[in-house]
Image 1 (cartoon, rainbow, N blue to C red):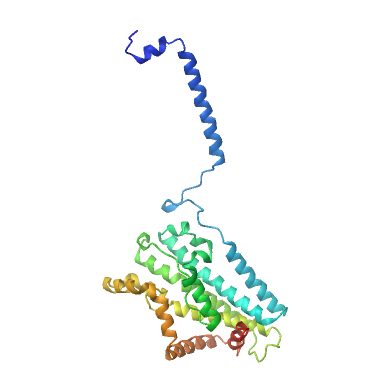
Image 2 (spheres, rainbow, N blue to C red; image 1 turned 135 degrees about the vertical axis):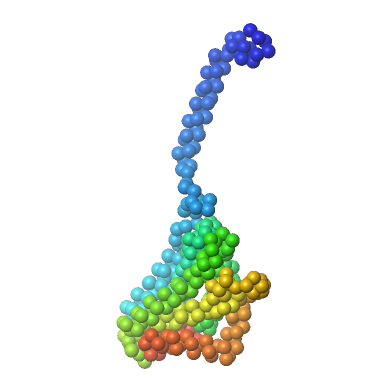
Length: 307
């Protein structure tokens, strides 16, 4: 036996068999324990972009609640149950918030398709209004202007990591996806009021007049929201559609004022000439659809039931 060889020393040891058996038992015990833990922690599939599949997805309960309020208040208006003014307010406000969530969801979904898989981890694919921007600047402020003045300022925002997008076209389509939701909602609501609604509303005591007034006013808000979002102001979707194709110096200048886009839009709308032109364009587009005469008027005044 070579005393310098550790294998020879181990073989010469009287307890080497017991030591080997103990090591085998410890190893088998750890293996069984790891297997049990593996069953308890079921692995999740890794999705594209390195994110866990399913992370940040699933419909938010808040969106489901908003959808339920929209349907319940709409059903109550149709059936003539309860006071009409609060029902119109709940229907229009909840319906507008539903389309706001869908607007931001569309941005995130197209970005995900275009290569920015980080939107899933940020919760943008859950239709949760709490995920879409600052709670005061991008949600509360637009809601306040909608309630007080009937002006649907662009609300909500998603942060897209543009360097992850595959092309300029993908970048442009991300910006276009949001207004496309409002345009689709506007077309659907205008078609419903035009094809199934009355020719005119002369009083809310008429059968289902409050329902058609609420639907017409919600259609008006969708048209207005789409047009405001399409304004070519940095920070708004209209500018975002064209931005990938603009010269670098213009993009740099736009980036400096992007954070103030909504405030710039608000300042313009506070100018009487600009507000008059905007209202004329929206009313003209709504009237082209042959919606019920006076529908927007009664819908707006029922929406502001406290005035």
